Amino acid sequence: MIQKWNKVRPPIPREFIEEFRTYLIQKKIDANEHRQKMLLKLKRQQNNYKNNTTTNNRNYYEWIDQRILSKTYPDYIKIIVNLILAPYLVVIKKLSYEESYHIINEWLQKCNLLRKLDFNVRTVVNTALTTAYKKQIPPMRMIRLKTNYKDLYFLLMQKGKIDREGKKNYN
Image (cartoon, rainbow, N blue to C red):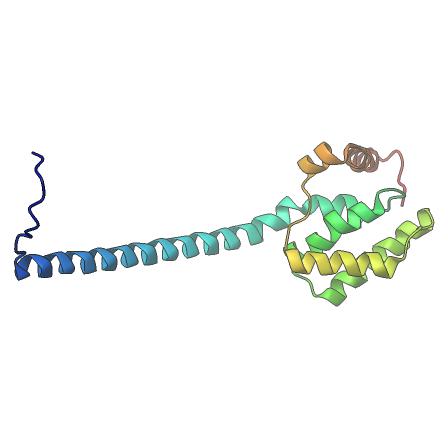
């Protein structure tokens, strides 16, 4: 029913206002409780994820120890250091800056024997480790390597096969 306003407001009982105010306060309390429960649930999930991934990551990234750190490569060294080794040592293994630097530097010296490095080792390693500490991004996965760096992927796969079959060893 539509009618023209006669400029008269009906009286609102005080009990109604108090009930409505109580309702709004309770709604706010319920929303805060729900938010707290969701945050607690999210924290539990994150803690479970961290606990699970810490143990699983060591197995998942085992290929880095087996196919990269234990062998030397003539090509793709900067990519390996920046996208695989530095993030692996910092994010997955949680090594200190000095330990990580030492491991990468030692690996680069072995690679240098295979083929002379054409870059400043200190600068590349410092940049890679600093980036890994700042961003905390895990190392590139094999699937991503296969998609984005096919030649490097096939080099890693070929070297693994050759070593397993015992035909050739580049070390």
